[in-house]
Image (cartoon, rainbow, N blue to C red; front, side, top):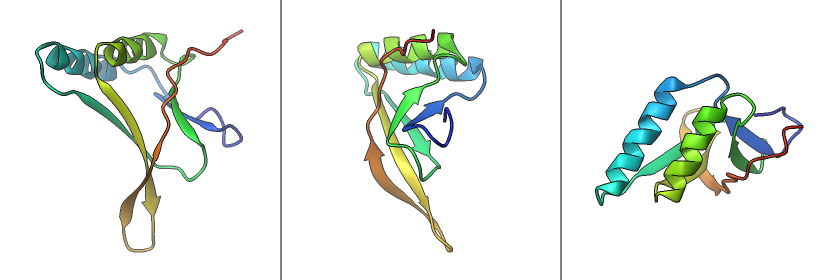
Length: 102
């Protein structure tokens, strides 16, 4: 997340070579006719949508955008924490728009 004061929850929080690798594998699977889904489990109560962290790992976010354009479904869901368990909450919108990083 950029900060707890913004509406966008962001990933990754560090450069993710492994993340780029798996996005490439999902894209290859889709190109072979299979379904590919990248699901982000958002573990925070704040934030109104999910977006990639362009400023932290531009290569990851470029790969994510390319995978989405190739047909990989990009989904985000909120995980709710209770005293006894975790549960899947609502889906969150995903914003793959590159922000103005100036």
